[in-house]
Image (tube, one colour):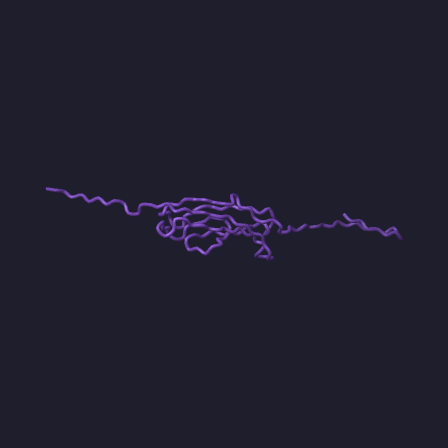
Length: 144
């Protein structure tokens, strides 16, 4: 409440002023944990969830809303931009690559609306476990 009055006369007025404090985007997202390690069998199902990354941002509004993306270009993995769920998009082949290293970026949405957003990264190491793709074949012959 603000009260104004005149020293020369008996006039005065009172009004209520509402002040809205806006959040400043001063905090970066924080991953919990900052590193992820998983082992996947070579025959892991396509489009199945591999893992879920988690990050929090203590800012308010769009300053605290997080989008996830994979820093490296990859055709093998994808991430849901708001949920942080990493999925397999291409078959794993142990003979071609036994470990996949990814950098996941968490960036607040202030970047989209105002520019100058905050971000942080988490490291993901995915080991591929070799699977016997060619099981034994048994042939049975009947001898007479």
